[in-house]
Image (tube, rainbow, N blue to C red):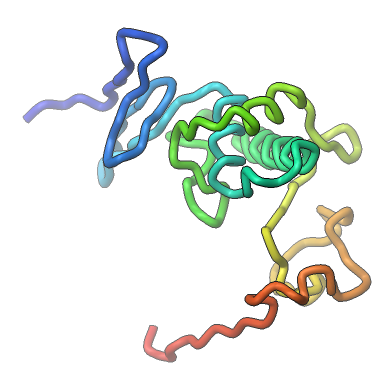
Length: 182
Protein backbone atom coordinates (compact mmCIF):
# COMPACT_ATOMS: atom_id res chain seq x y z
CA UNK A 1 0.00 0.00 0.00
CA UNK A 2 1.12 3.50 -0.80
CA UNK A 3 0.48 6.08 1.87
CA UNK A 4 0.38 9.18 -0.31
CA UNK A 5 -1.89 11.90 1.07
CA UNK A 6 -1.46 14.56 -1.59
CA UNK A 7 -0.61 14.64 -5.32
CA UNK A 8 -0.37 17.84 -7.40
CA UNK A 9 -0.87 17.78 -11.16
CA UNK A 10 0.04 20.74 -13.31
CA UNK A 11 0.90 21.36 -16.93
CA UNK A 12 4.55 21.93 -17.87
CA UNK A 13 3.45 24.71 -20.22
CA UNK A 14 1.56 27.56 -18.53
CA UNK A 15 -0.48 28.11 -21.71
CA UNK A 16 -1.81 24.54 -21.66
CA UNK A 17 -4.58 23.37 -19.39
CA UNK A 18 -5.28 20.02 -17.80
CA UNK A 19 -8.13 18.17 -19.51
CA UNK A 20 -10.47 15.69 -17.88
CA UNK A 21 -13.84 14.36 -19.13
CA UNK A 22 -14.30 17.07 -21.80
CA UNK A 23 -13.42 19.89 -19.40
CA UNK A 24 -10.26 21.98 -19.34
CA UNK A 25 -8.76 23.22 -16.07
CA UNK A 26 -6.26 26.01 -15.46
CA UNK A 27 -3.95 26.03 -12.47
CA UNK A 28 -3.17 22.88 -10.52
CA UNK A 29 -5.21 19.77 -9.87
CA UNK A 30 -4.75 18.61 -6.30
CA UNK A 31 -5.62 15.06 -5.26
CA UNK A 32 -5.91 14.66 -1.48
CA UNK A 33 -7.14 11.85 0.67
CA UNK A 34 -8.38 11.52 4.17
CA UNK A 35 -9.39 8.26 5.81
CA UNK A 36 -12.60 7.97 3.78
CA UNK A 37 -12.42 9.85 0.47
CA UNK A 38 -10.21 11.16 -2.28
CA UNK A 39 -10.83 14.83 -3.08
CA UNK A 40 -10.05 16.34 -6.48
CA UNK A 41 -9.58 20.10 -6.25
CA UNK A 42 -8.69 22.67 -8.89
CA UNK A 43 -6.41 25.28 -7.33
CA UNK A 44 -6.83 28.33 -9.54
CA UNK A 45 -6.39 32.12 -9.45
CA UNK A 46 -9.53 33.89 -8.20
CA UNK A 47 -10.03 35.96 -11.38
CA UNK A 48 -9.77 32.85 -13.59
CA UNK A 49 -12.23 31.10 -11.29
CA UNK A 50 -14.65 34.05 -11.55
CA UNK A 51 -14.45 33.99 -15.37
CA UNK A 52 -15.19 30.26 -15.43
CA UNK A 53 -18.20 30.60 -13.09
CA UNK A 54 -19.63 33.58 -14.99
CA UNK A 55 -19.25 31.62 -18.25
CA UNK A 56 -21.15 28.68 -16.74
CA UNK A 57 -23.83 30.43 -14.64
CA UNK A 58 -24.69 33.48 -16.74
CA UNK A 59 -25.44 34.15 -20.40
CA UNK A 60 -22.55 35.39 -22.54
CA UNK A 61 -25.02 37.19 -24.84
CA UNK A 62 -25.81 39.61 -22.02
CA UNK A 63 -24.60 43.20 -22.32
CA UNK A 64 -21.02 43.72 -21.11
CA UNK A 65 -22.22 45.80 -18.15
CA UNK A 66 -24.50 42.95 -17.03
CA UNK A 67 -21.57 40.54 -17.23
CA UNK A 68 -19.50 42.96 -15.14
CA UNK A 69 -22.20 42.86 -12.47
CA UNK A 70 -22.20 39.05 -12.71
CA UNK A 71 -18.41 39.04 -12.22
CA UNK A 72 -18.63 41.27 -9.14
CA UNK A 73 -21.41 39.16 -7.62
CA UNK A 74 -19.58 35.92 -8.38
CA UNK A 75 -16.30 37.23 -6.93
CA UNK A 76 -18.07 38.61 -3.85
CA UNK A 77 -19.72 35.27 -3.10
CA UNK A 78 -16.42 33.41 -3.59
CA UNK A 79 -14.48 35.80 -1.32
CA UNK A 80 -17.24 35.59 1.32
CA UNK A 81 -16.97 31.78 1.30
CA UNK A 82 -13.15 31.85 1.32
CA UNK A 83 -13.15 34.08 4.40
CA UNK A 84 -15.59 31.77 6.18
CA UNK A 85 -12.96 29.04 6.11
CA UNK A 86 -10.79 30.08 9.04
CA UNK A 87 -8.44 27.16 8.59
CA UNK A 88 -7.18 25.71 5.35
CA UNK A 89 -9.46 22.88 4.35
CA UNK A 90 -9.42 20.46 1.49
CA UNK A 91 -11.51 22.87 -0.60
CA UNK A 92 -13.22 26.25 -0.19
CA UNK A 93 -16.11 26.09 -2.67
CA UNK A 94 -18.16 23.15 -3.89
CA UNK A 95 -18.90 22.80 -7.59
CA UNK A 96 -22.65 22.63 -7.07
CA UNK A 97 -25.80 24.71 -6.79
CA UNK A 98 -24.97 25.08 -3.10
CA UNK A 99 -21.95 27.23 -3.96
CA UNK A 100 -21.04 28.05 -7.55
CA UNK A 101 -21.13 25.97 -10.70
CA UNK A 102 -17.58 25.61 -11.95
CA UNK A 103 -16.47 23.50 -14.91
CA UNK A 104 -12.97 24.80 -15.46
CA UNK A 105 -11.79 26.99 -18.29
CA UNK A 106 -14.45 28.16 -20.77
CA UNK A 107 -12.93 30.50 -23.37
CA UNK A 108 -15.03 33.63 -23.85
CA UNK A 109 -13.42 37.01 -24.59
CA UNK A 110 -16.46 39.06 -23.58
CA UNK A 111 -16.56 37.40 -20.16
CA UNK A 112 -12.78 37.71 -19.76
CA UNK A 113 -13.15 41.45 -20.44
CA UNK A 114 -15.96 41.79 -17.89
CA UNK A 115 -13.85 40.03 -15.25
CA UNK A 116 -10.72 42.04 -16.14
CA UNK A 117 -12.57 45.38 -16.01
CA UNK A 118 -13.92 44.58 -12.52
CA UNK A 119 -10.79 42.85 -11.18
CA UNK A 120 -10.73 42.77 -7.39
CA UNK A 121 -14.09 44.51 -6.96
CA UNK A 122 -16.51 43.07 -4.42
CA UNK A 123 -19.65 44.22 -2.65
CA UNK A 124 -19.26 44.86 1.07
CA UNK A 125 -21.48 45.56 4.04
CA UNK A 126 -19.91 46.76 7.27
CA UNK A 127 -16.47 46.37 5.62
CA UNK A 128 -16.98 42.65 4.94
CA UNK A 129 -17.90 40.86 1.70
CA UNK A 130 -21.62 40.18 1.56
CA UNK A 131 -23.08 36.76 0.95
CA UNK A 132 -23.98 37.60 -2.65
CA UNK A 133 -26.72 35.12 -3.38
CA UNK A 134 -27.88 35.09 -6.98
CA UNK A 135 -30.07 33.12 -9.31
CA UNK A 136 -31.05 33.54 -12.94
CA UNK A 137 -34.67 33.64 -11.78
CA UNK A 138 -36.00 33.69 -8.24
CA UNK A 139 -39.43 32.13 -8.70
CA UNK A 140 -40.95 35.02 -6.75
CA UNK A 141 -39.74 33.63 -3.43
CA UNK A 142 -39.72 36.11 -0.58
CA UNK A 143 -36.53 35.40 1.40
CA UNK A 144 -38.40 35.76 4.71
CA UNK A 145 -40.26 32.59 3.69
CA UNK A 146 -37.03 30.63 3.33
CA UNK A 147 -36.76 28.46 6.41
CA UNK A 148 -33.57 28.47 8.42
CA UNK A 149 -32.06 31.62 6.92
CA UNK A 150 -30.60 34.15 9.36
CA UNK A 151 -31.64 37.64 8.21
CA UNK A 152 -30.09 39.21 11.29
CA UNK A 153 -26.71 38.05 10.01
CA UNK A 154 -27.45 39.11 6.39
CA UNK A 155 -30.06 41.91 6.59
CA UNK A 156 -29.14 43.22 3.13
CA UNK A 157 -30.85 40.15 1.57
CA UNK A 158 -34.23 40.69 3.17
CA UNK A 159 -37.09 41.56 0.80
CA UNK A 160 -40.28 43.27 1.88
CA UNK A 161 -42.18 42.62 -1.35
CA UNK A 162 -42.56 39.58 -3.56
CA UNK A 163 -40.43 39.74 -6.71
CA UNK A 164 -42.44 39.99 -9.92
CA UNK A 165 -39.49 40.79 -12.20
CA UNK A 166 -39.17 37.27 -13.55
CA UNK A 167 -42.86 36.39 -13.61
CA UNK A 168 -42.79 36.03 -17.41
CA UNK A 169 -40.03 33.42 -17.16
CA UNK A 170 -41.43 29.98 -17.99
CA UNK A 171 -40.21 28.51 -14.70
CA UNK A 172 -41.57 31.30 -12.48
CA UNK A 173 -44.02 28.93 -10.83
CA UNK A 174 -42.53 25.66 -9.68
CA UNK A 175 -43.20 22.90 -7.26
CA UNK A 176 -41.31 20.07 -5.66
CA UNK A 177 -42.64 16.68 -4.68
CA UNK A 178 -40.85 14.82 -1.93
CA UNK A 179 -41.28 11.22 -1.00
CA UNK A 180 -41.91 10.34 2.63
CA UNK A 181 -39.52 7.40 2.20
CA UNK A 182 -36.32 8.94 3.44
